[in-house]
Image 1 (cartoon, protein in one colour):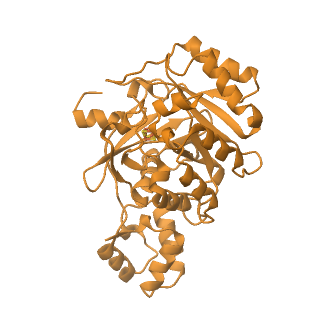
Image 2: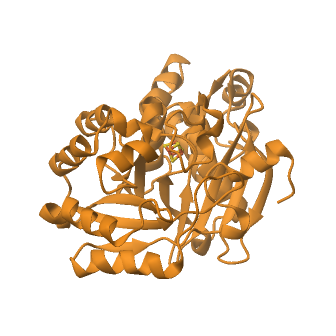
Image 3: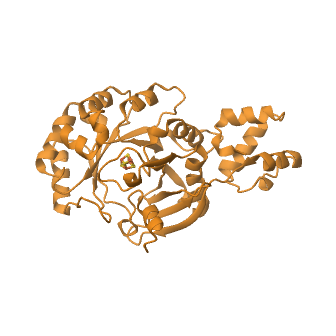
Length: 353
Ligand code: SF4
């Protein structure tokens, strides 16, 4: 069985031609899959009965089954828990921003990167998601919300479970599907890939002519190499110095900046000295970066604590005083444990949330 959402537009055209159908059938099928978001081939009413029957016999279009969802009473964000065909589970978070909706998608079941503060990594990597499993998070949530203008998801961030660039080909294909004018039609500038900083994969993404141009976010989380290597073991081989050198050399479109994510952890990386070191790290290329400060969201068994609000604000002030664009991301949906991996873990442990 071929899942049609595993195919980018070129592959869909090839599939259609190999079946002996006319090329325009690809456009029709893409419309039903990504615009109408149908759940069955029978709904594709402008295809002939023969074509629909062949599709039904040889293909599938659904990859996720909704297990449960929870909506935050604080900010309206919604966390979805899906079951995959092999029984694994993944999460997606819908974030209600002031003027738009952002979807935070997962790219792997579990994660091998091993950041010390992250819940997702506790069980290691189980497997990569297929392209269809990434794309269906968007399709299913948009279907869940309905298609009205106010419910339209405009932004996608690859910041859920997993390291996106460790699942390179499927992430690339999902971005192609999200941005293709005959598929999901989302704007390139509203899609962000967030990486823990795998240097060769970031390089590869920028050198790859087939990877649609989208924004980059990198998890920094530290103001010096030792601290980063402690919090993010990946930094032992992909050092902070090499990372910064690479980020300074990346070609950026006019007006685009690289986002540096910084999870603030009490008494670990949240001191004024950390803020000053961060200023030093960024001062040469302030215009290239913006910093997102994310106060740590504690979870059961976590080794770390969340800093008090005044410490977070003091950290932010030092950055702004040095003209570094800085934004605090008070974790959305704290009441539904919206940090990645937590709903899944609770479901596995069968703890009431
Ligand atoms: S923070 Fe991201 S990259 Fe690090 S372990 Fe968690 S999911 Fe993986």
